[in-house]
Image 1 (cartoon, rainbow, N blue to C red):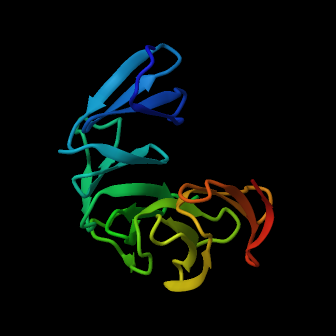
Image 2: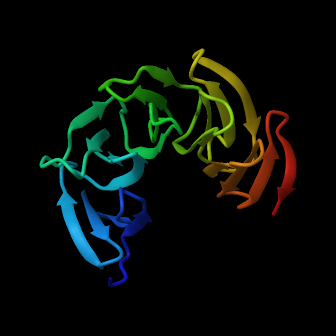
Length: 212
């Protein structure tokens, strides 16, 4: 496969390992083993900046403010459309049990959807900048972490089972990514302006295990 400036992300569906390529407003699925494009999926009007797999369902978030749910096995380009964000969708993450989808937007909102909803079932508005970094805990059902942009700098924790805001940590920098450890109750965050650091946090104390 020729190199591209587009964003390429690799996931597993059944026995094939495709690469999902975002090209303008389209999503292309490739069979990486055979270097062959499986299909091109349309539906968005503007650029696609976020992707997340739920088993065989692929969710895509766009600058057109929508989230499309796609089933590569179906003939249609998308099987449902989720509406709620007022600006670009820049973060998507499915929970480990594949029951809830969290989405973050440039409207500073964090939404939670279930498998069948077309409107968010939970809405969180505490962030004061774009929400790109999202991570579900593999250790506690319903525990969700989200990170805000440069004007916010905070990691916030939510319990989606009780619909409650648990805690907030000001990191001092834009939060770009969040990933939970699968082995221990720790969380790694990566940051942009102004300190550009990588931090490992111990949850729930949020003491720093290491940083660089």
